[in-house]
Length: 247
Image (cartoon, rainbow, N blue to C red; front, side, top):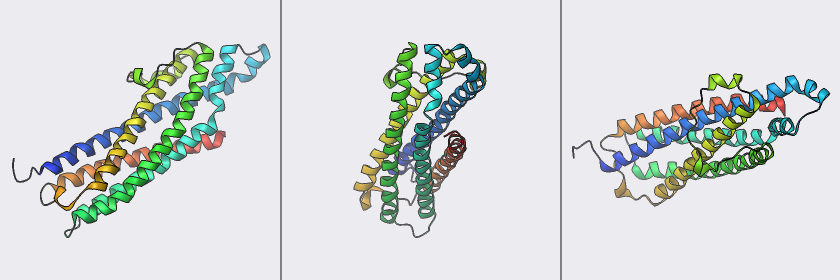
């Protein structure tokens, strides 16, 4: 092992990359879910008066129900916004401490612990709010006879988002449920990551972390993570504006 290959730093770099990938996945899945909802809302708002003149079918009533849960989506968005804000704060703290010449590993851990616990709690709240949305969509799935797979059965969604606008309600709703399942898995992994981090950083002792070597690499990882949290926050803020206008 070379002098710059501190084993603890290497572990931290892997963990940071894992978190960065999770935040990226959160952003992408949230964006897809938002697009699906927006299309449902626009489609049913435009055609609702025509459908009501001839009478809504049970399936159309179920699909229209998707647009009536704006308040639930807004709760998820507001919770996600708090998560992104705490995420940005924790990256800012880590970068500042890592770049300080007199940095102390214990000082770093003290600063990160409080943020880690806060982010863990906010992530759990986000998971709870999203679980409520998922249950609502599950009920609609039963009404329209669509097999709503559990999160364990969910497969990665590879649908081209450019094709969503051309989909009929049934196909769009199927994609919607796939995206929700994908997001369920991602949020669960995100919460689990912060649970582990809170435990790891709580038990850290002086001899466990040394930043004499390889700190520049860690700074880069934290900066990459901060960038993804900022993208996530930008996405969520745009959604917040939309949902607020429809609530």
